[in-house]
Picture 1 (spheres, helix red, strand yellow):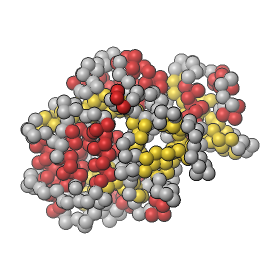
Picture 2 (picture 1 turned 90 degrees about the vertical axis):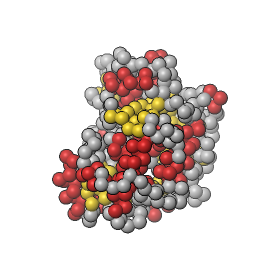
Picture 3 (picture 1 turned 90 degrees about the horizontal axis):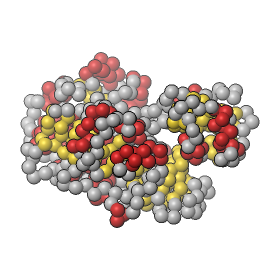
Picture 4 (picture 1 turned 180 degrees about the horizontal axis):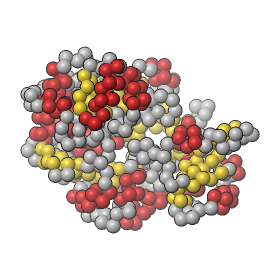
Length: 499
């Protein structure tokens, strides 16, 4: 079944009721259907080859969401790109994915169209967050009726490029079946209700904002309070109208700084895409009375695990990402491939209906990322406790080998973050002539921390080989658009420290 048709089946019976409120611009469910039909008809009129990719490098807007639905309806492949990407980055994505259509913000049309045309793209349109652009102009002349193109569960629906923290980004291929199965699982596990209202403040070029948040509301026929960009004061003021909120840890930190934070009708706060500090989890509970639900997923797999939503499924445990979702297989393996014992740290491997089809045009790389018995190697390191809850320790590529000993940055960060004066920390390994790699910590201050005092305190708490040789204080840690600390940049910045 075409994923659009499955989402459409979740719309309410009264299509003239409110679907999305975007700062006073109101969209009914019928508007979503008609708008996506017109855009789908325009895409089909272009006579694109079967399986064509439609790349979208535009600011967040409701029309952007409608365009996504249109691409699904027309049977093409959606390729969302972070609008912050610059020319060198965009060149790679366009050259690799070879889209037939590129949609960009009007302000970027000059350089994006030149770049796209040089790569052989035939069609470039604009789409702005104020309901203008050449794409909407073209679609306005089309019929508002369209029959979704039939698609099988295994047919490609979207390509998501990984963040590329090591080497070039890879395009994870997600099928109609991958996306629908995950949306249906989350609808049940997170107990979506008929009266739920989602406050949507995440970007839609990413799994979290598009395939988790938007899919959840659409499949459940739930109204959305839509923010094109996150504004803590505005979001805090409108939370009282919502029941569900999904955010990255940075959003929760900013909301805690808002005096007018009100959560009267809220039932569920979800966090993901980056680790949530236990201090933030506890502070949110103290301030609002709500326990944030942490979950775990990837571009290649969609959502894999979740803390329980309903009391009968168990308790929410801060610092963990919960148990595997229904239908998901998860195991932790040692370096030699043998199973880890309870609470033993190892490599996280998964399988299930939401695991991707492979990397775009990279069959050898795809094969490398799966075990001989068909489990996907996530690249994450973690441990599973006696209750089946997964705690993530970090990425295997972030593992530091110092003097022959393995150092997991997240473990050291956990101890650092508990020390007075430390706001947040990032632990990295940098080249060292004697040790191979030296442990280095970069922290943001919460007061006036003394780097040497922090090192002394850590020596009393953890093994000496894990203790950072240097601690640096910075105003803020570098992050990507989803709030993840970009350790690659930190490793590059401090690479010559012990040269």
